[in-house]
Length: 266
Image (cartoon, rainbow, N blue to C red; front, side, top):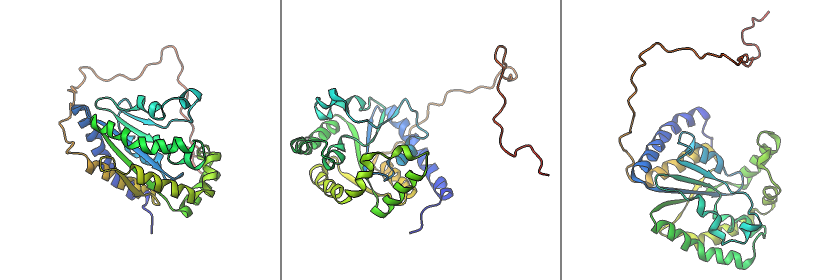
């Protein structure tokens, strides 16, 4: 299938981002709390989807949570405990770039947790999520799917691109050889945590741009009418003519030189 071009994507994502801005305004007015969980295989496109959502939102209202490996103290806590401080307050949004479902995925496959810890997680996760929902939190869980051939291409791109190489880790590289193990772990996770009150939604991310549009559209359609009147402050004209910026004590640096600009070709 032919993938969506950048120009097409830009034209389609802009109106959705305007709706997201309206949604954030609605959350602020109503005091509702929104949590969106992004899970999926390595390279699926979780970061890009999250960036598309929060790109034009107030960072004081919308926080992205991507927790590192737990330290010794955190490892001794109740498993869900370190996620709780990141839950939103009234009017806020939390986007989890991976979440408590690490235990059902990478920790299970890579044997970073015991069998009992894993089984306990599968029992407790639906209970934990029911508590969140009963308290009024709007919870949406998305699983981003990607074929193994597409995943391989993205791994290779990260390896070749010095700006993306930081995304590769030893665990990511081991995931290549454990594709089937991750599939089995995902199916076990779904069986235990796909509930009526907190269902999983699968989104095809083999075309990442199309996947982002699909996910954002689905998220917006699951919310009630979020249209509210904007509190736009008055913006009267200045009484005096605008002034240029003045530098009294510091010398401004010269603009960054752009190669070829301002020079005539001989």
